[in-house]
Image (tube, rainbow, N blue to C red; front, side, top):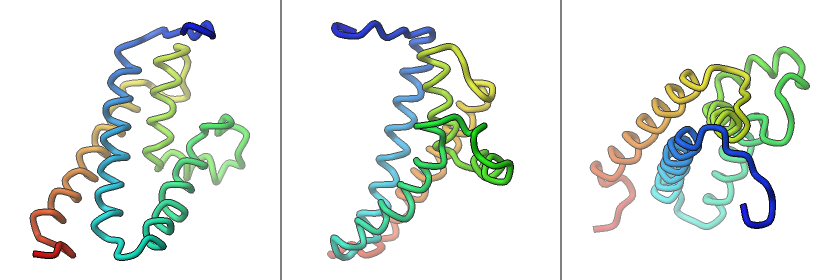
Length: 128
């Protein structure tokens, strides 16, 4: 904000989506760290899970520029809703309702976090 005039239309939405999005990415990182036994597997998780989810979420373009099939597939992507929620928080515009986005991101965050906690509790690949 010191260098660029960045509008923030709904700061609470920005804060909530930053919290849920950061938690979702952190939970994905925990699962990747538990699952991977080598550095190559960590890179594979990023390249084959995180990267496609982020590229099909509409970060760099509107999903309306995608063919209809890929638009429908993008609506199953929780990253799409995370980006759309940030877009609503900053600019006041979104492709879907911000409440739908918040619900989808929160459910994804809780689901992935629960999986990470269950993996930790089970002791999966944890040396004793």
